Length: 189
Image (cartoon, rainbow, N blue to C red; front, side, top):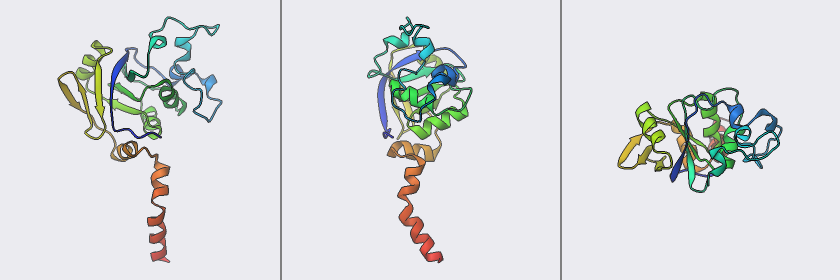
């Protein structure tokens, strides 16, 4: 996965609450174990009508090279566990999801796949919701969000932070430790 250190981007606001993983990517797109092509499935039923034509949903007007931070309503990513949801968001172009509450399984899947989920206070969330399109800087090294003249901190599980900063998943970290594991095992033999 790509390393994540610091990102400066405009924000795209989805104020809806309780966006579940089936809305992020409908179940019919889960027939693949590849991440390729999942951008089209991202919020598919919001972005396309029944005949496959684009709707007027604002997501269809997003230039994701400029809008990589999603400000989502409360309880984002609830519902079923599916790694395809963070894969689809990443394929669509988002690197960060900020909300007041992010479902635990979705957060875990996101961290393991390179999408940074950030939980913030209701006050900060409201500020970000009211300033859609504002440029923010999310700094994982410092664990801060900078917007305008405001700087706010956020928390993240230390091992997940280490993996994101290095651009490695937990298996990569384990593989990197093979020499130390072999040395340890040799001492015990």
